[in-house]
Structures are given as C-alpha cells and as structure tokens.
Image (cartoon, rainbow, N blue to C red; front, top):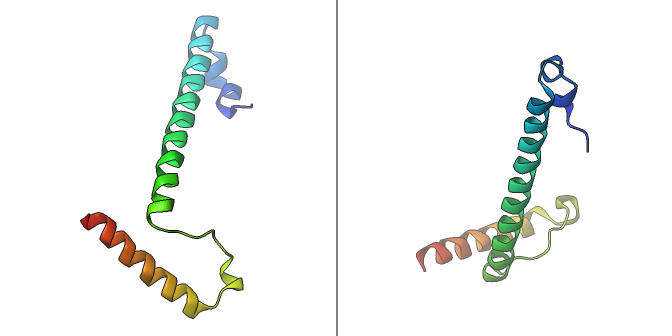
Length: 84
C-alpha cells in the first residue's frame, strides 16, 4: 500500500516517533473504514432480501419503460418498509 502523505515534506520533518504515530493513525483509520464497510455490506445484504432487489443490469441493456416500472416498484417497497 502506498500513502501519498508519507512523501510530503511535512512528513519528513517529523521525528521517528512522530512518523510512527502517523503510520499507526493511518492504519487505524483504514481498519475502522474496513469495519464500517463490512457493517454496511451486512446491512445491505438484509435490505437486499427484504426489498426483493434484483442484480443490476446495465441501463443500455434494459428498456427505459422497464427501468421506470422497476423504479416505481422499488419506491413503493421502500415506502412500505419505512412504514413498517
């Protein structure tokens, strides 16, 4: 992994202990983002089933009328889920 900030002039002025703290902070931030992403995906997995979503198809392969119908159906299911 490469972190561009580590190449900045300000980074080179830090003491070795300061550099270590920066790297630890970056690592901890990355780990926190990873855990948040996992939680988000877990939540989406449940919502995917509850909202009866289908796998994405490229818009150019689906007619606009079909997309409009799907969108209206999805909006209806979302509103029903909010009300429940």
